[in-house]
Image 1: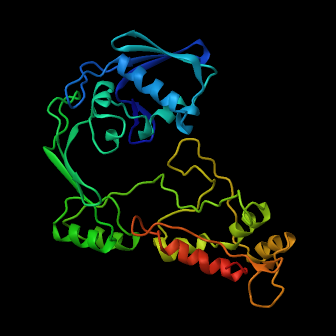
Image 2: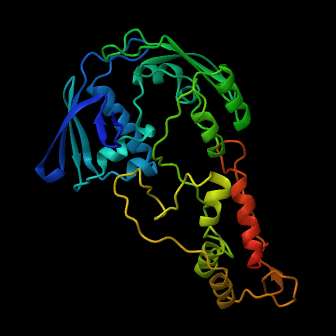
Image 3: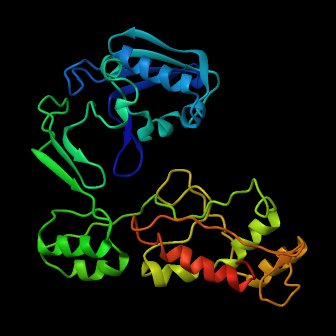
Length: 330
């Protein structure tokens, strides 16, 4: 329904415009005219209502974050809806930019079934799916009936899945690829020196983080979780892994590229503090093996990570593992 422009601000897409009334409780949505799905079915207010009610009824966490009223959607005409909230919510349009809120064609969904939409595509976008193979490629062709004048200006696009960074870089250098979206920061300087290539970079909303399972021991203890934060030298990873081209997080959710960012101080590297926190919760090295234990058992944590997706997938966990060992965590 909405997207973000180059500055990161919410911008119209399928929603042409909107009016906010009644102190933020009522929103009038005006849709783009002449939009159709790839199969020719019309995109209109009834389609939007069906999609929103479907998501509300699924009770997913994203949609539940929006305080919908008991009767949230009314169709005024083919291109206009009235949306009602139970309380003002300034973040509604930021939330709607998330791709989870893409619009489905209800007639098509009924024809193919809810499971088929996981592997088939029938959208309103500038390109239509021609063919794909899982973990290999995705081929798209131009949508001749796209609603935005002059777009798309390409006839087709092929996305190729290449998990290895070195392979991606060699293929862009040799001309086998027209573009790559992710390269190692260690390769950026060399690529910038190549007169046949153009390197574009900007602030990213990508976050490298470790999610701690705080439901079960020992991570249900806040002192243990704080100790892990103090034990990890985040600043020490910026150079070796990312060639000093990333910055430290200042909060657990937002980066500088996201509206609402506030630069609070992160946990600083202090292994001594980490050991103190562990000891305060009874985790001490009582048998001299170099690892903390409690009730006769060492603290043994399991870490799961991706491999080959983006830079840092394996490098960060390997460094973190070594840092945790320094404070006595296996």
